[in-house]
Image (cartoon, rainbow, N blue to C red; front, side, top):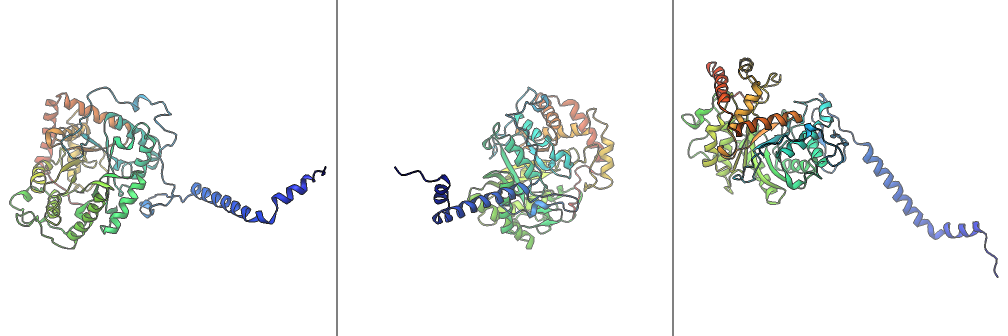
Length: 453
């Protein structure tokens, strides 16, 4: 019988044979590489926004790992008990506008509030965004509007929706975002930048497709065609139509380099639509004559297809409701498939504390404060009701985009919406007329301010 070999000799021969060295080298490389990659994911890069660095997210390239602001990751609707404030109040279900091409909910969640223009870092980093989004979804608000220009909005909204994905899968809501504007004075409508922006939005929103993508604030890029920068613009539909570029026969006229930039950028969005990355495409902006002129230009330029969606803001409010006069022209003459009205509070003008950056004239802001005491529930409540009453099924299936920062604001919006469905409008109408009289006798009813340069 052969005596057993010493254990140490056997171990050394089997595990330190020269043939095993390549195996150890491969295993070691894998371990080191995995450790480095895990460390890199955990450590950064950090992306921090401050007043001196207001748009750091615009430098994030597609595929780059980052640590940006996150919603409270401890919140998950399936793992955390919901407070009463996180649950909808029983009542009439929110209307779905079945006649529109996307069957949008009557109220659209404006996620521009997920930015420092409206809320502090502490607010954005709390669980309030995800709770607000969750409550809106439970009420039936199933459409979200955001933009790459709205700072961290896309990131925060995408994170919130991911936290809620077990309760609300991607198929249960629609996402709208915008491209082309990246800072207060930073616009890039080149086709390559439009495509890059859309792909980056897909990553930030953590989705494989977008329901709508708009060119953002087109008035800053297109060729300027307007006899004045502020005041009433209703004359664009009548005696001054030629001065606004809206005369019959001028629909397909490219008036300069800016117009061509619009057409080129929209053509790139059309390609993304054909590729299935985007379902609907459109334009947004403030001046209604400019939006109408560009919608006509796109329709009368090859391949002669109309704009799917147009979003107008601050033109269906107590102070300015000229959207109602322009809407038939968008639908019939420009063949736009879906209109949306945004900002019932006119970017904060019709609130107790209009933001310091608001572009309204120095004379207009005090008038809003003068009108604040007319309605006992407050001017925001009255303003919201006015915009809700003039949108929806009875007004061309037009949804209203409302910005929400807290669950309480969602509750308040739905309360007003339900009051109007129940027919509680007579007292409101009288108060609305009194508020509009304040603006009218001072020459500021249906007065549009100049888009800031």
